[in-house]
Image (cartoon, rainbow, N blue to C red; front, side):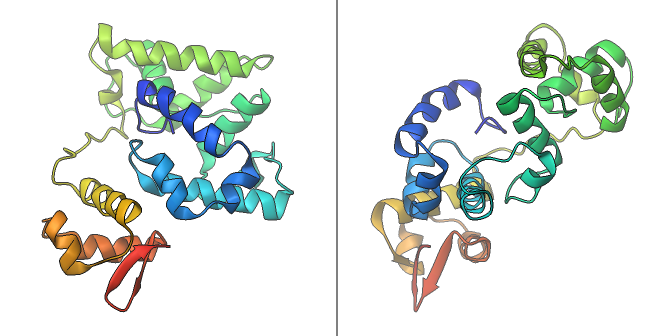
Length: 228
C-alpha cells in the first residue's frame, strides 16, 4: 500500500483492509470485486490484483505461510527484487539490502550532495556498509522516516537520481480513467461500452478497457464489460 501512496491515506485504509481480509487465506479466496471495493481510495488497482494473486500463490505453494526467503517471494506476482527484501527486513527482521524513494534521498543527500544523475548501483554498497544487521527493521524504519522529512528542509535529493521521473498529472491520465472504470463496475456491475461512455467521457476509454481485460481485471461477455 505504501508504494506511491501517502502514509496518511494508508494509515486509514490498512486497518479497514485487515478487518475484511485478516488472513492470507481470506484474501486469496475473496472475489476480485470485493478486493477492489475495499482497495478503493488507494489508487493503482493493479497492486490490489497483484496482492490477491500473491495471496493465492502463498496458499497454494506455501500452505498459507508467507515465505521468509526473498528468492521465493520474488516468484510471487507483483513482488520484485527490492520489495522482496523489504518484506523480509520488516516482517522477519533479517538483514537484506534494498532501496526505495526515502532511503534513496538520505544517501544522495549525505554522500552525493552536488552530484547529478546518481544511479542506484552507487548507493547500494553504501546501504550495505551501513546496514544495522542486528536490527534492520528499526534501521530501515528510521531511514525512511528521515528521508520523508528531507524535502521539507531542502530541495528533494531524489531529483539528483538517475532514476528520477516526475509524475504526470492525474487529471485526464490513464490512471484516472482506469480508476473510474473499476469504481463504476464495482458499484453497479456489468456495463456496455455506450453505458460506460455516459459516465466516463475520455477518448482513451476503449483502450483502457482493453488493457484492463488483458491484465485480468475485467472480462467482456458479448457487449458487456464486468469485473472478473
